[in-house]
Length: 369
Image 1: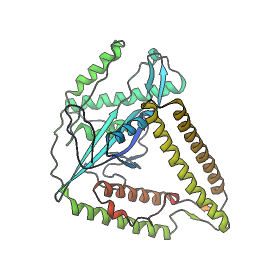
Image 2: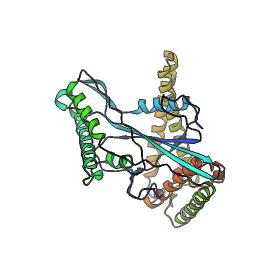
Image 3: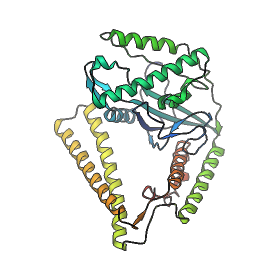
Image 4: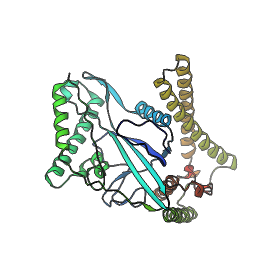
């Protein structure tokens, strides 16, 4: 449940909540990592034309400190660069999804909040960017141009070109159907041309009308049974695929000690990566709370050590995988099914079915994918 201070005009929520990892979009690229219409990591969407990201991991949040820690982590990992008009210009759009579920009697009510921070449009001649930063500015402007066309089409009831940009595909659910969308326009009086463009864009957005509806909720026990049944079905499919040779496995070469070393290296790399992510998050929180220089140095050293160890183990694993006949990687179909299983388990946690996950210890490991 939430236990957090809310801004004026926002009511506090109670229930189970999880945040999907933030998605940084370089913009303008092909929709890699996005589920096609009618699927969300293999699970049905309420809107058959809605797109979503694939491979997110839900982070459970309960307190204001959890929210602040997440916000600092997102800000620390965002891509930014300095140019003539901005000392820290965002080089990517950022999308964070908040999933919230409440159980009221026998009903399960789900809500989803999509928080989007758009990178600002930039005039390349004014910013003076070159090389890679120029390419980033070009793709940012391209995605925002498509977003502008989408808004105009919605305003005039014309064909809406959602599929022309990764950004607009992910925002599709916010521009229609049952959603309620609010927009904040950031302006800078010292940049009059850019401010005028931003205000004009905000004015066009006022012409887009949504029809927000109140969901009555789903049968909670029925939803848990459905998710558990689907999970068991997927586990059986994965077991069958593994038996048929679709999962990752050792080949005919390599002795028992080499195979144990490979498995240990996978486990150690996963541990070092988790230490690096935790240290980076703690570092972001420490920077925001005004920690001492010695504390910041210790956290930075811990993160650097974990990153070095993880990279070293990754290179060792690559060399081991390069040995002919030693390791046979899983097929793409197996990895896709494994992703679907993990998505279902996250949905079970969000729906209050954490107890149902106690028997997942024998589920396929990430190393197999």
